[in-house]
Length: 139
Image (cartoon, one colour):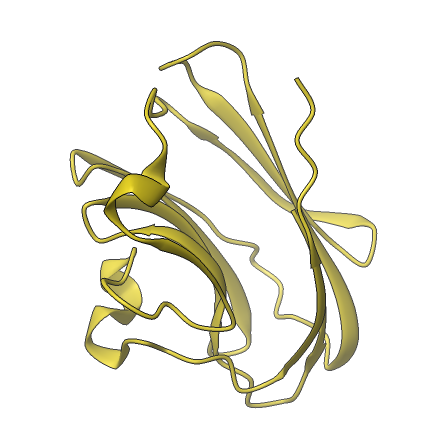
């Protein structure tokens, strides 16, 4: 997933969310930092978070997820403006799609929030400007 956005100094909110509280994946900005969560049906929640704050201005955020096999682990790499900012491993992934229990949202998490981190602030609408979201699936 590639997100091109304009980030202000106080930017916060969901960039994209797929699924819901009972299972999904989300990418959001909070307190100047980027956060990613893979929620495996409330059984296991995995966070990948860059240590460095996001730069202000126009940014290109890339989240690459490589899953070896159904229900297998996933390697997640997050790049900001072409430089790797964080990487992590989701121990197990879902065999079923997350959209059966909610939706795919851009700039908000409109129904049931994927992450507990912003649950009480839902729909946690992004305060910056999203110019483009591109999703590329490679098998």
